[in-house]
Length: 207
Length: 249
Image 1 (cartoon, each protein chain N blue to C red):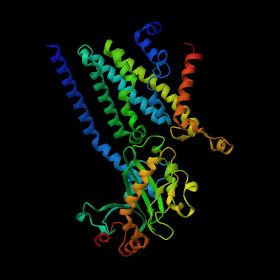
Image 2: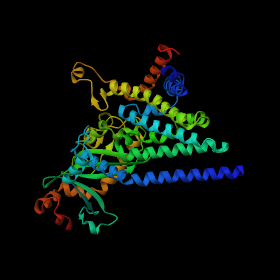
Image 3: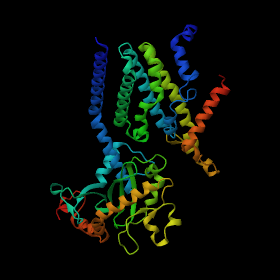
Image 4: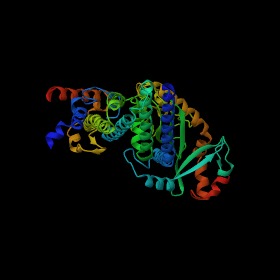
């Protein structure tokens, strides 16, 4: 059972998205948003969910239309589908998670131009059946989200001593001279974290 | 079917479906979004007067309850007199008054001004003395994140607390954002009217400074009334926030 599962294409697609060619740590895509929304874990989680939703459903929709899409306007079609999904996600966040959506500000809208979404639509969804494309989108979203949340975890922990807004570093640490790492709150902090993750995956875990 | 025609038909149908979906999402969720924006504004007014702390995130319902209990929305004309809602003109200014029991504690002026990249919207709360700033909040801006965007952060907003919009003689001067640290660039006598600037956000500071000046000048007649304790006197004679007769004057 597990052997057959490991040989299945779905498994390989998931493994590729999460690890072998992770959008952030291997392909170095989507860096802009991962620098901007990882100061806090809560924004990173919401951003990951929004991107996963968009990439999964854009893959599904584009893949199910792939035989009808005229070749000469395919990029326009892809962008139209992606933009529609992004705006829907944005409207949804504004209605149900207003505070988080205010913090994410333009970055939800910028999912439209996120290379991960376009990349999956163009390279995978255009040449694979809907089911597989949906799983591929889901896996890529999770691959992106896993790095995003990991970076945000360390940035929030080291930068403000909190996790999801709750104080986790006890006051006695601060009394003993511990200080929050201000660098982690700035964009360079995210660069360093992403760099460390990339190095960790490439060197320590082997290529 | 002709290849070109097929392309046009496909594009047309796709656009139609996308626009229908977006319209449905936008109109279906509109009510909730408008409500969220309103609660957020009320939260900012309450934060400006100090009823909600910076790290507190009360639920929407308790914000609304607190707002209804403590804040009253008024309109004032250019002379600073209260205008009844049915006789409100286009030149009249909105004013939010913070009541503790029956006495006025502070009033809140909406700050809607130009920023570097777009509109800045916020609230400035001024004590009942008509000159001491009680708090400042920003609920919308398009400034550069990390630079001008810092205006919404509590470390910057806290600097306004206790500053004055009047000089030592009690004359109106507005509140300004210094270019750099107040201690280094502003003479001692004027420090009470300046807050430290944000490095890398000189332009945002400049826009905000001129916005404060224009808006507070418009509200100066109201501030004068507070300074002369006119508002307080009227209130103590005529009753609490629900007393409509206050507005008839």
